[in-house]
Image 1 (tube, rainbow, N blue to C red):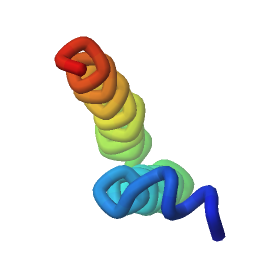
Image 2: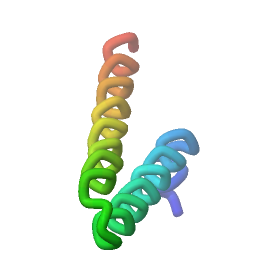
Image 3: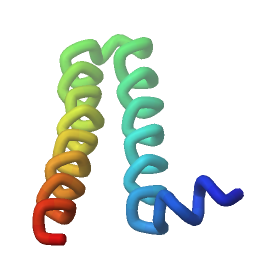
Length: 62
């Protein structure tokens, strides 16, 4: 539980959103919409990259 407090609410919600995006992408891909599944599947790494960038910018300001 201490890990979740250290992670923060905003980051936890973003990680849950990434997991949800991956599940939707897998659903689309496996149901015959391969192109839509790949398109939606690329959102999760992009969102994770933005999270890393914002964390780096926040650490530089301190």
